[in-house]
Image (cartoon, rainbow, N blue to C red; front, side, top):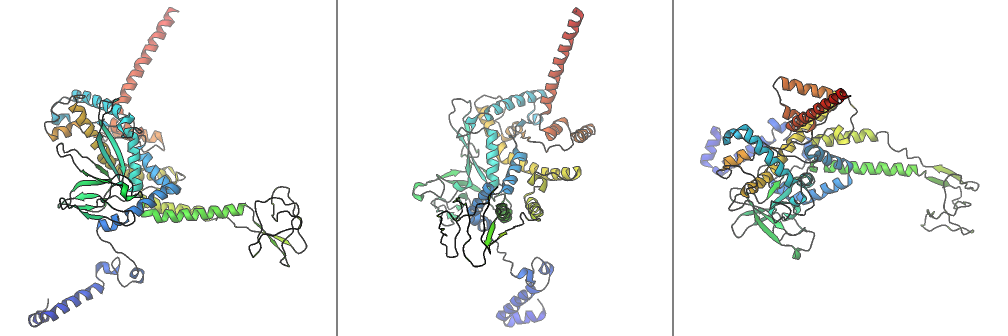
Length: 531
């Protein structure tokens, strides 16, 4: 504020306020910093850019239902969208992430050998539970199949809700079962599908409810409101249940919300395909148009040209699959009573009258730019989805270095998603299972319930999955051996990354095979001596 402003402010505060407001407006239209580029209000290219943005609830929740439906439709109907989701499923989950217990024996104060025995016992019993379909509430999926469904639900719908439930299973020692639920069923009580209803107040405690997720004054998620059926059903037949986020006595999670947030205070997930849904839809329309044009061209379309405008006369035509129409839309009639259709096929002869000629339509399809255009769009879509074009189209036509670079780039993305999914889905369920196993005496872990730190030390685990694949196995195995020799890696890690196997199981199997070979050699030597 300069001297003049101070004087004006002293004698006329209202005028001083107008001067300050005018100065702010003037600064807004001057070119300072980003006002010359991203925040420009004067450039023609930026003037008509609609860029309204508000809270995560306004930007995301208000549009979530429509995004979910379009994302699912893209998966159902577009090969590119299907490939993107299946590529994630195959590389992130594959046949399923297997648990590898990693007990922190130093913190607990037990010997490494004892920890190895406990890890083996835990691994065997967890896999026994996970391999049975009664670990799923519907009795239709194993734990490894549930992983695939949960991941694909997140990719298509932006989120997946997981409900740990305890029911009596006659064929199992465990009561823990898993129920998966789509985000459609998490909604505000008494909401209607005909209009967007994302905000409510819980009259019982004053908490806010955003799109079915209840939060307290500290913005912590405290409960979920679950509808009994999808909102496309009759509203009168739907009821809502409030489920606390955590058990009051145990503190265990009652609901696992599998999603990736991109903004603070974001409570609902965004479909994986959301940024490219428009591109995928337009690409699908272009493909349909090219396919239809090529199909029409393949039908060898023929037009009969006449000089006097009279209908053409065909002989020997009895096919009624196509009817010729006049300009008035009425079918043509012939004295011979036969259908006025043109039959084009092998050996067919159609006699034309004087003044008539045939003109063939040549659609010149497919377009010469068809493949290049598809490749270009797929590169853009793949870049947005963090999937290289080679993996998206399952086409490796470049050099070894380029193909390996594409795989490594994709592997960074898949590894991140695997770590996130293991932390959001696998680890919480594994800890709940281990709690029940120790409580029932199925597994003996001394001091497990003494405090949370000991529980955390016992429940540490890794979840290896599919390997990134090998373009040149010889080079990649040699590289692994060099890293192990230099102390930059270990056998366990390299076995997982090369072919997804367990290093200790490999060693045990090799030892057993060598013993078998040794026995066979000794027996053969004895037989030779006897002879």
